Amino acid sequence: MKLSQKERIGMKKISEDEQNKPSFLDTPQSELDSGRIVQCPHCNGYGSSFKDPKDVNKCTLCGGGGLVPDYLAERYEKLFDNQKMWNKDICRYYLDNSSIFDNPSNVYDFGLFATTIKDAGGRDIKPENAYGWNNQPEVVTFLADGKTLPKIKKALDSLDVFKKWGCIIREKDWE
Image (tube, rainbow, N blue to C red):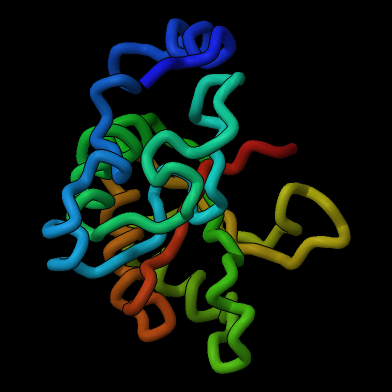
């Protein structure tokens, strides 16, 4: 396969971790047929990610499709995202108001989520507009450290609304 100059330049900027990351594009068809397909944990189903190098337009895990086999998502989370996120000191996170709440039967229940987070060890739980923008829905924000964050995720994932797709917890990166 011959690469264009732009692709070669982009490849030079990719770190060794990125080059060694498991890729959905390299998955044999037999493995794809044997498992469940889930939302890509690298780009959260959007098909592109700010975690990728600047010149890369598609997610390097799912190839832009937004979906990956569940075994690949689990392997990715163990190797990369969770390793970086769970090892942090106390930080403010938020429970994403993702597209699963577009379904009228799934309600973003602030009270239920806040109670679950508090019971699992989260602190200073409060509502904030997503991204700090007034035209965005309110989301649950909370403080947690690397030891309590996996407990919070596990507790939230056990709720009925998250049993199928799982919850999305992100680091709050707005003021």
